[in-house]
Image 1 (cartoon, rainbow, N blue to C red):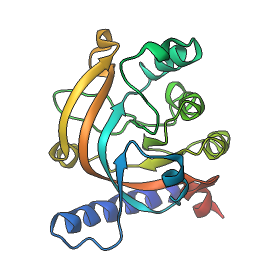
Image 2 (cartoon, rainbow, N blue to C red):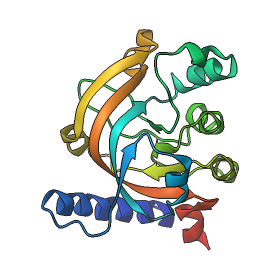
Image 3 (cartoon, helix red, strand yellow):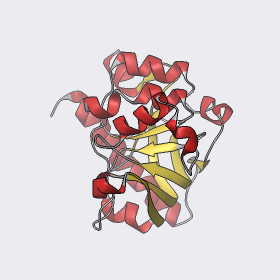
Image 4 (tube, one colour):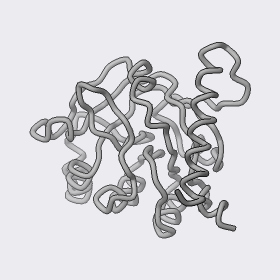
Length: 201
């Protein structure tokens, strides 16, 4: 395991411990975010910030996100029965077993982040290091990237409801909307800075 992987593993372990403290009422410094959020709220976030995510969020990964970008670029998104302004996209499929982050640096996922951010997505949630070009695209569009621990049982316990809102033919790879409470995460990329880059300096 390389040094970068060790850094993220340590952050996930600490984040899990913080989420346990939160449940016991011992939380001291985690930032609570209720989605949708504004660009001004996003701009207050910095790398290494620990956040608790609540509200309505979107779920999708490599099968559906390129289709969503096609809708945006073709103007069809205006007819959609949902708004993505101020939203969050969690890079996961949604199955009976629950949810858990997939690798955000897959081409089919990472290549959609700029378009989605331009359209109003304020946070991308997943795992893995992103390219410098993506870091810069997020900065330009007032969006951030956060990593979340792959603990399905924990995330299931904090998921209040879920529904498919687009591309149902994709099954668990469709676009879903989840209503969640206190998903724990760490801000990994914000303002052109990355926790990976900081580690390498």
